[in-house]
Image (cartoon, rainbow, N blue to C red):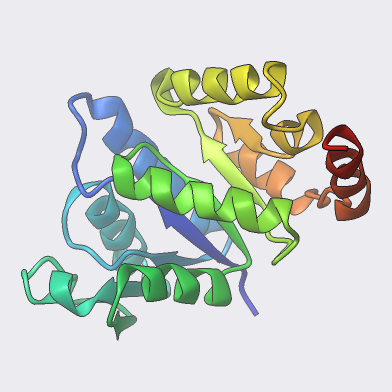
Length: 197
């Protein structure tokens, strides 16, 4: 049975070709390694590049999209399967249920929302599925700097920051995702109780 990886990424193409090239590289890696794609179901932006590349090689692509977006005619009509849900929250829930791990490519608010939810779920051990950020063209540098600042200021724990997998190379990122080990929840919960006394 092939691994299923959910990719969060932009419904826009971005202003530089490097983002489109990266989406194709990810898709090519999935093709070569028999990895199925779970994604937001759109036929626009980096999402379209990912889906089309895998579909051109007859690989499994499962899209998950809320009815409101299907009604706006942005759903990809050539997928292996399109799962239509009622809400954005249900979309994320289905993505989490069906996927073995997650990769964030460059994107906007939606991508940020999706990767934040996985970070929280991993922190609380709601699930133990790795999240990798493909840091194309330094796109996520400012976000990663914010996470480092949050550690420095005592609002994110160093072990949770360290458990976030980052690379600018898809092969390296996938190797790290497959080696992922979740952070134990007991110690940091005890620590925050102590500091709050």
